[in-house]
Length: 84
Image (cartoon, one colour):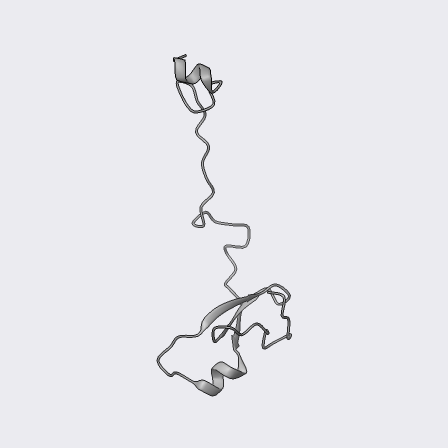
């Protein structure tokens, strides 16, 4: 053990140190085989149409899907959930 490793108790590497892998978003999850549920467009996004800006995707935890709307919108068009 080097002098630096003795100071920190050997926590920061050295021979025999375990490498901990960080979970990445590319790792398949338990529901990776299921397609994402598309909840559609919000009424405001439908009304404004395609005016050069793409709608933002918003997650609805109650419906377990993604709906699309403009920035600042918070209400799911399917269930009216406002909690994300």
